[in-house]
Image: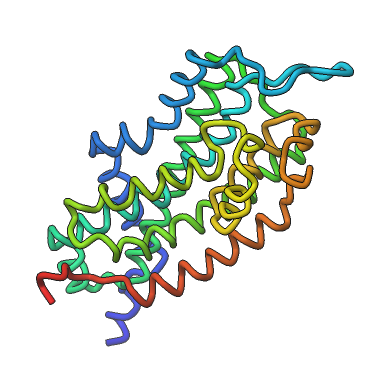
Length: 278
């Protein structure tokens, strides 16, 4: 018995191996590559070609004007996180449930926590590569200036970590909503699109009606996008934000609250079997 315990893989090794498996599965799926991994970069290129030279804010007092493609970049960074962390998880888990993958995994020695940790590893790994590609295209191909101050990148770091963790656990919780794997995309994608429009991803947030700005403040994507704007836009652009502040503290509180809610909902409603299996 002692020898068996000594040779049993640790939780960290199980989680890491599961994470590697999840990463391989993700990159083998062409649909995932196009609609999750490449979507933010494709959208940035498309919108930049259509409206990239239009100015969102005119320059003054030695400050360069901010054009649409520069303003659009933070929104696509936030969207990349919600695609990879929320949409991908919330649609892939129902498919695995329908295909019996979760049922088989539950019957193995793999702990449930290691399965969830594997999903988290996949999300963070894919998100890092996705954002690296997005920022490389933004800088090299589109000529969008990136921040040079270390404080901006520190903000980017904690916002990325917190928002990715939040969207991941919310994706796990929301995966209980679709009745089947086939219906998952039809249920999840409209939610993401609505949140994007409410959060001003596709147009300046200052143009969103005041009541929509208030309502969108209940959800993490608005604060993710606003925090990313504080990183990638000039400080003078804070004048176009509600209350003329980046409100990073408020955003951190809202995202942290959703992280806790997501964890509670995921533990309460996550299902290993399809409804048809009882």
